[in-house]
Every structure is written in structure tokens, then in C-alpha cells.
Image 1 (tube, rainbow, N blue to C red):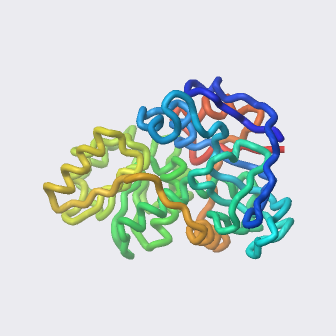
Image 2 (image 1 turned 180 degrees about the vertical axis):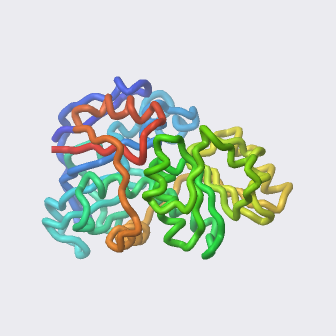
Length: 320
């Protein structure tokens, strides 16, 4: 089968289209013919081994896992003898958790993995881009325990995580303000944001507004500057925090009455989360946002585009 493989860390050029052996499902596994995947910021970080700590988990000198890709949508081609939950021909989508490997035509998954039946109302490309931003946003919004009527500010509201966070926060009954660039204001409004701040014209830390939750999905704001915009006992979510922001966030949590939620280890992916997102899609409360679509053969170009940091929502990869 065809797959995108990388055997060393580096620029997008380390990604190579090649042929690898097609997997065979074990008794408790399903074999999925992958129709679409996506390029996310996490894929870029793993490819570059940036930050350096990536090497401690994924290979010090070269990657242990040579096929990237953590999300997918496709069709079940065969099932193991003990599989009960799915059948051949089912269209499914989901997240690989830590196994990766969806930059390929086929992949095996345990039937109890983070998988759900694909909503009939959306395409494979649209389904594939849902799990990364959707599960990440859901993880942090649950940690913040958002209540109906609370004011939530989302920085990076037009990105993969941010666009999902806007829609999920609205589902939970929040009053949502999105922060994005001029070019993305209309998009964020269309996702349901009650107000949109164009950061090129307005600094939310200086407009006098305060929020119950501030969700920085892109690590673009100053932690210290944002605290004045956070209500007492409010929650600051730093889903893309670097080392500096992690240190600042930890100090704030210790020395103030404001709560900081950051990534500690890897986000746990569960089938129930994918099923929840599926339900919202079917209710029309969660819409996939796709900026560009590339064929698998143009993975280098897709990574180059994502690495620039200006994508709207997601970049889908079509596998034929």
C-alpha cells in the first residue's frame, strides 16, 4: 500500500511517498481503507522534533514511528474474528491516539478504539478533520467546567482547535468571543461566536472586558497580560503552551485565585468523545472547517502550508 514515511526529523522534505506492507487485522481489530486524513500542528511538531522533548518519547536520534497521521475517515474492509461492534462496509472516523499511521491507505485499529460511525451528512474529508481540534477543545472545556451564561474568550478562534472550541462552547451555553485576524472574522461569526475581536485592530487585554474563561488555542498571547482580563476564580486555558507559558501558568496557579489549565502528558482519546462529536455534527452544532485539501502525494506541500501557521481550521488529505 502507499504511505508517507519519514525516517529522520527535519523539514517537510523528509516526508517520502513509498510502498509499505498492507496490515492484517488481529482477531479484535478492524482494517480500515483510509479515505482521508489531516495535517495538524501535532504532526508538524513530531516531524520536526520541536520541542526537543519530542525525541524523549518518539526517538532520540530518529523517529520510532515512521508513518505520521493521527486522524482518519474511511471504510472498514475486513474485521477480525472477535469483532462485534463494526462490520465490513461501515464508514467510520476517529483518532489513533498514540499509534499514528494514518498517512497511509490502510490501518488496523482495535474495535474499542476512538472510532465512531461517520455521519452520513458529511464527506470523508470533513469527517477526518473533526477529531484533532474537536477532542482537544472538548478536553479543555470539560476541565474548565463551563456553565451556561459564562463569558468565554477564544484566542485563535479560526484554527483547528479554536474553531471547534467556539462551537463547543456555544453548545455548552457560553457567551463566546472569538479573537482572530481580519480575514477570518466572517468565518468565526459563522461558527456562532457572539462577538469577534480582530486582533489587528483591538487588544482584548486593554478593552476593559473580563471573562470567566480565556482559551488560548495557539500560544499567541502573553499570559501575564491576559490575567487582568480574567475574572476572579476564572480559568485560563493554555492548550498550546510552550515551556515559558507552562512555567508562568504554574506560578499563577500557586500564587493566585485564578486557575490555569495546561496539557499534562497526552490527551486521552476515547470512543465516547468521538461519538459525542458525531452527535453534535448530526444536530448541526459542529461544522468541519477546511482551508485546503491536498492529495496524499502532495504531503510535503501540505506540511509546508500548515507550518506557516496561517491556516483557517484544518488541512485535509485525500487518499485515493
